[in-house]
Image (cartoon, rainbow, N blue to C red; front, side):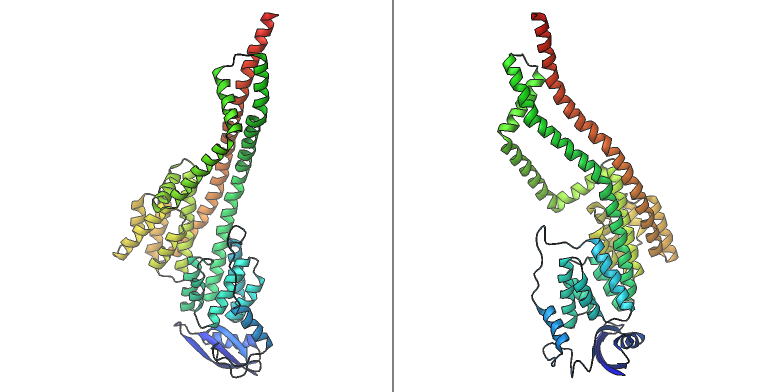
Length: 432
């Protein structure tokens, strides 16, 4: 038997320290878990003598422990900018799944974090996990450690970890988080995949138009000038536009940059962002897809939080920040006020006029039966499938519209060039 020093958290959230005898580290962790303790750290007494778990008073650690402390206390450089490396949903899902597996296997939290920090594919996630491990080493709770790196870990993760610590179901919460992030990533991938083809077609068509205006039109203009042709008004307007673009292209670029920059600044203001989100919901077809996406996020996030034991008002506050549309978020804020006044959740959502009747009816049944989390999960699964079909239809509609619109522009340019050529040909035949 080996004597282990441990640091753990009780079901009430308090930190406790002590020793436990077991044949190995995994069995020691299982013994502590059977007592209802959530193990943060576990160290063999043969490796660390007289250790008190307080960094300022810690005794002489062995070489492996010194390496771990050095790695955790070394200053980390957080990546910035475009190439800094962001943490995607897939990375978060993989981390949550691996973390849940390691906790379920009896590996201490600190050991798990150190292992996952070394294995993480994202540099930013590695830095964040190292910071979380250092916070655990200093005695902070796991949820507080994640909250300190809110730039990487979203509110849903922080609140579910807090609920998992309180209820002693941390591994279940991380499994649910992994499922949540995986499904969110799958829907996002489908949306991006369906919209990639129209974007590529639009880019190619714009390049063709720029090539014609820059290289093709000047050649025809020289021909018309040499032959002294009388050009129609349409042709003169197209050639004048070509001359302006070639001679004053920097003014055009500056205007586009100024317009995009001004719009971006306005879109970042609360009023501008709300107006854009409200406008998106009113666009035919696109608005329906955006609303279904927001409803799916609302249902999945709220259902996941409620199933993990997060209080309703806290869960709604998290959903409000993650739903992805400010008009829908405003409806959720109104629902929070109604709940504080002692009313239900469904009525204020119905009053907003945004949520489909099917969603509200299923939520109403869930409130009456006490299974609202299950109903919300079913709603999210249904809308995820519906979004896939809706995005495919939208992509099929956008492609011909883009082709017809840009084809019309190219055709207009060609007609403006061909018309004077017919006039020149007719003049030459008459003179002949």
